[in-house]
Image 1 (cartoon, one colour):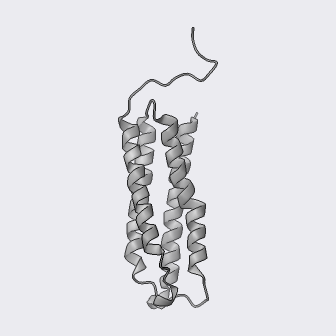
Image 2 (cartoon, helix red, strand yellow; image 1 turned 90 degrees about the vertical axis):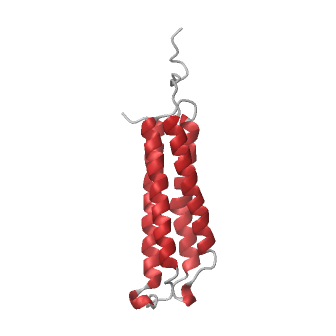
Image 3 (cartoon, helix red, strand yellow; image 1 turned 90 degrees about the horizontal axis):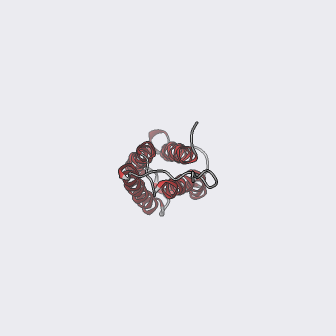
Length: 149
């Protein structure tokens, strides 16, 4: 049976993977065929805000909640999952940053580059808390009401 901490860390990993895939596909859409942009009218600001608020922010928050749940006793399994989440986020954002320069000038969003740096910093933070969780050794306290006297 999967405990709460493992489920929350896996949800964080899933949301981060979803963010990376959504961001990569949307930037690819903005570049369009032959680097001329899409054939339809789009408002990239709204879509980027939506992608970040649906997947990136909850994924980063769930990674922090996972750390809050296991900070006293640690877990190697959860530490590995958190490190994987951070690495996926870093690789995805680096790939997205390389593609941003190919977006046509008419569709370029000014806040996109600073936003990617903020998410890059969050990826480093997730890796750090994953390493801390992996290295922390301790005994898990039994739930309230199940103590042995």
